[in-house]
Picture (cartoon, rainbow, N blue to C red):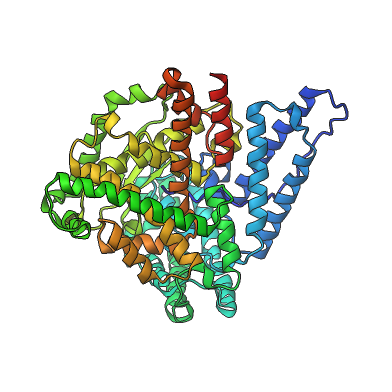
Length: 591
């Protein structure tokens, strides 16, 4: 899923905290804590306006963060210090259980945020997988989170584009500082970033991605307004953005690529091992060490290999498992599509199959609408399938994006499993229910912890048979393959960043244990190189949720209700895994 984890934000504004002098005045104390959570959310949005737009907080739609600058990082530190001080004044004993969760979540984010600020990650502000430049491209398409319904909306994005042209200069300034200090991307990633800028200039303005919204102007706009906006967008794109795109592409090709490092993991940087330890903590929300995670990954890979052998035997394949992977990768029957529309239709078919069975497992379901779309062309070559959240007010549906860069090579053996993870009941259920929960403070409605969110989505893949899927052994093999993919991630991510593995070593290990194509695996390995630690979140979270379900079943016996278990896991939104465990244990004890 496309969510950049717990955002590390800072405060631009001060807030007034009322000191509660009487220890027994619980209402005032709660009022103070409510003010803290509200201010915390406002301050986050102020420093992450692109994220605020994604979350439907539209008062920030004309703004842009300069996350690589020293001044931004100074504001981050001020933010963390302010909320650390604020939490110290809160009397925990007066808080409700849900307020205690909010307290612990803020405390955790502040601690990890301060740890991350200790390392110069801002010297690598761009990579190929996600970030400001890719989000701006998505918003420019006119059909994403950035609204284009009113004249004000159009002027907002015009201002945001103007800031973006300056942002590109700032990125280059800090990347040059990175060159001087040897804090640069691996060459393999730089090669992938170059086209993301080099392909942006167009000979015809109407074909430019940033002109897209002009072609979508509402018919209610007057002709004068349309002409004015068209002229302004044309000037902004031609005079500012295109020259900056050309400048960035030239810089990347001529200066940054020759200086890019030949190593693959961040462990090779002088501060890399400390940074990776923090990333591991951030993404897993645990204290697990990279070595421990690596060993767990190898254990899970062995277990899943044994399960895959059973499917190989079931379909009558007599070769080795490695040969079976090749067989599945290239089996013509698993590449039946000739048009991208057929891929989308197949996912719609999967959706129709599970609909009657969802009620059997979920009493708590979202109201937010849901759509399946092909990934936009400008990022399709480097994108994975992903979910983009809808708006809590219903103005924008949740969207499951499917990249189809080469229809002839599209293999659908894992599509049933993929739908459960990215769409229903995976990310769409979890994120939508969280946003719709009016009892949560806003900062939690729009929050993200990878171990919980991705762990939940991976857990839902195991529900396929109960939902009417996996009747075909190849689709069940797809589920095993996708779980294997997440187990492999534990091995290769820690291998790359903690054990000094090369990109090629990681690709080789994946090829030996997965049925994906070499091209797909290469893209994945380069993703882990770009965002260290993120790949660890899936399996760590899934294993914890499965452990909690088994614990509940063992202790509750006939009283165990799967619908109620899912409700308890989902109702409070994302949180560190220790808090989720505490919540489920309390539910079990009550029963």
